[in-house]
Length: 443
Ligand code: HEM
Image (cartoon, rainbow, N blue to C red):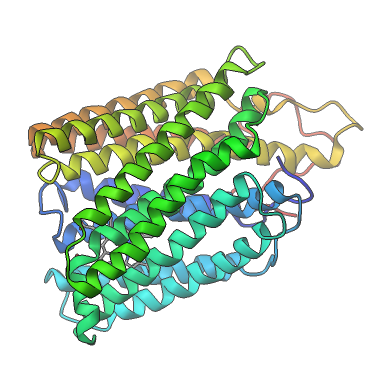
C-alpha cells in the first residue's frame, strides 16, 4: 500500500475536502440551492461546485498523491507541487463560488470573479494532472490506466468550465457562447462520470483486492471495463464538440455515451463481485462493508436512471438521480475508504520506524469500528431517504434528510480525528515512535 514513502500532504487534502463537505451540507440544510432552487440557478452552482471540486475532487487528489506512486511502484514525479496546488484550488474555488453568488445577485456584480476562479482552478488542477500523469505514465498498466483516463476527463471538465466562466463574464466570442448554451451536460459528465467515477473504479480494483485479501483482477479483464468507459468520455468530448459546432443537438452523443457508460459499469460490477467472491478475509472490515452500500447505491442509480428514461421523466428527476450518484456512490465510497486510508497511513507513519524492533499495535487497533458503524449507517440511510424525498418532490423534508446526513458525516469525521490522534490505542507510544500531526505527514 505504501511503497517507498508517505505522501506528505494527503491528510491536508482530506481535511480541506471534509471542510468543504460540511459547507455543502450546511447549504443543503439551510435550503440554499437545489431542491429549493432550480438545477440551473446560481445557488445550485455554488452547491454543485462546493461538492464536486471542494469535497470530491480534493479528496480524490489527496488519495491519488499517495496511491499513484504505489500503483506504478515509482516515486511521485514531483513532491513539491501538492501544497501549492491545494492553495490554488481552494483560492480558485472561493472565487468561482463568489462569481456564482454575484451572478445570482447575492454579491455585487463582478464579472471578473468567474474567469479568475477558472484560471486559479486550471492552475491547481493542471499541476496535479501533470504531476500524477507523469507518475502514472512511468508504468501505465492496470489501475494506472483508469487514473490516466480520469485525469484526461478532468482536463476536459476544466476546459469546458473555463469556457463557461469566460462566456458568463460576457468576455467570450460566439463559439464560447454556443459551448455555454449546449455544453453543460458534457461538462457534468466528464467531471462526474470521467474524472471521479473512472478514477474511483480504477483505485477500487487495487484497494479492494488488498483489503479483502483477494486475487487481483487481470489486466485484460479490467481493461475490458475501462475501454467502454473511456470511449464514453471520448464520445462526449469529441462528439459533443462536433455537435456544438454543427448546432445539431447532443441527444445522439449523450445516448451513445450512456450505453457505453452502462457497459463499463456492468463489467466493473462483474469484476467487483469476482473480487468479493475470491476473498480470503471472510469477515469484512467496516470500510469494505460500507463500500458495499456504495455499490448498492451505484446499482440503484443505474436502475433509477433506466426507469426514469423508460417513463420519460429523466429530465424532471435529474436532480434526484445525480444526488444518489454523488452522495450514495461517490461520497459514500470516499468516506468509507478515507476511514481506512487514514487509519493505515497513521499506523504506518507512527509505527513504521520502530516496526520489528518493538511490539506495535495492528492497524485495526487504531479504530473503533462498532462505534463508527452507526454513523455510516445513518449517513447512507439519510442519503437514500433524501433520494426518495427528492423523487416525491418534498423539498422541505429533504432538509431533514440533509441534517441527518450532516450528523452522520460529523460522527465519521470525529472517528477519523480520533484515529489520527491515536485516541483508541491503549498501549503507550513505543520509544522511537512519534505521534503524527493531524493535518500532514511528518516524513
Ligand atoms: C475549472 C474548474 C471548473 C469551472 C471553472 C467550472 C465552471 C462551471 C460553470 C460556469 C458552470 C455553469 C454553466 C451554466 O451556466 O449553466 C458549471 C456547471 C457545472 N459544473 Fe463546473 N466547473 C469546474 C469544474 C467542475 C468539476 C471538476 C465538476 C465535477 C466533478 C463540475 C461539475 C459541474 C456540474 C455538474 C455543472 C452543472 C450544474 C447545474 O446545471 O446545476 N464542474 N461549471
